[in-house]
Amino acid sequence: MKILDRYIAKNFLYGYFISLFVMIGMFLTIDLFMNLDEFAELLGMEDATGHEMTMMDVMMNVVRFYGIRCALWYKDMAGMIIVIAAVFSLTRMTRSNELVAVMASGMSLKRILAPILLLSVFLTGLMVADQEFLIPKYAYELTREHDELSYENAYDIWFVGDDRGSLFCSQEYDEKTKTLDEPFIIIREPVDGSGDIYRVTGKIRAASAVYDAQRGGWVLTGGQQMLLGGGDTELTEGRQSKSIDFYKSNLTAGDIPIRKREGFKSLLSLRQLTELENNTGVRTTDMAALALQKHSRVTKPIINLIMLMVALPVLVCRDPKAMKTAVLISFLTTLSCFLVVFVCDLFATEVFLGQIRPAIWAWTPIFIFFPVALIEIDSMRT
Image (cartoon, rainbow, N blue to C red; front, top):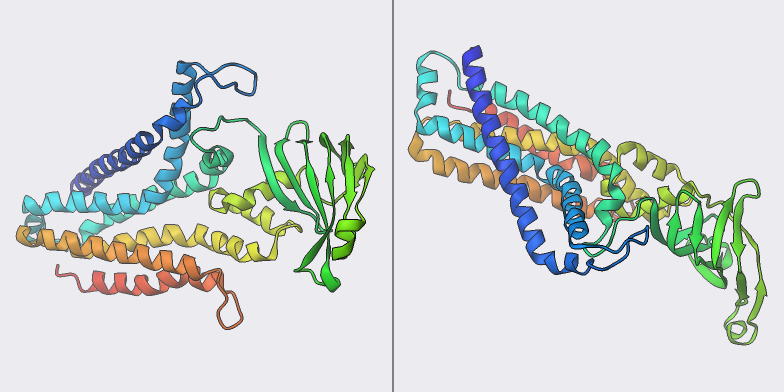
């Protein structure tokens, strides 16, 4: 038994690493070919230290860009790679009539699935570690465009709100110095006490803004506030401008990195999603998307294993002539699972019957395909 398990595990891992390198290499080659001119635009640009980018610097930037991007591609393709590896290993055994020899020894073909499933659980764990630890660490890097340089702990923010309804914008926020560069603050107030509809009453511009924790707000350098009034006539006739050196807000320097993550929820860890969900400034419309992402952290690894359980019984066939059909059926069932997951994610944040139920939509693919997997395994011809 141990010899057979090692043999099956060896074949499976062999197929897994081949599939992994081929698929990631394919994604990398296509993306690099389509965006090579974007990287070329970096030549001669200045980085954060004022150093002019040389050809070697551009090449190192490309290596860093795709080195980090591979972690994201691995997370997205982990389930499919496992299925392809299973197809590779079982097809090889079927073509060599090794499954017939296993049956002739009196062993059930279901026993062959054990090492593949065990290794799949371990590899799915690697995908979870990638999602929870590696990807969140480089989330900002993963959101930059091909023609952008990486500025550590510095990024732009747009329309980040506080409890008063004001919106903060800045082309660059530096986490180290807690400084907003040329901030633009839109001052608003709710219409008729409503928390959903706001009216713009003023705006603030400044050269820079530094957060002061003791005073609970932002110290402005060269700040100018324009009051727009409350009605339409006042917008044109009652404009006033005055100097302002401090703006009180519950939006702290520590909140900005958390709120920045609203734009790339899929790149966050479960802990970061919880922090974002508990932040008082998060928009109500984003809460359903956050709930969906939190449930997906649990359901996606399970769905990857269920996809494998659906595909494996079809692949365990004794006749080499039927192997092509078995491979086609396994890929179609895997594709159908992907489509169901996609549709459920699409409708998870929509309102049905006056309610939003992201948890139900996130778990629906498991409710559908797990019974199918059990039925297929039970009906295997062993």
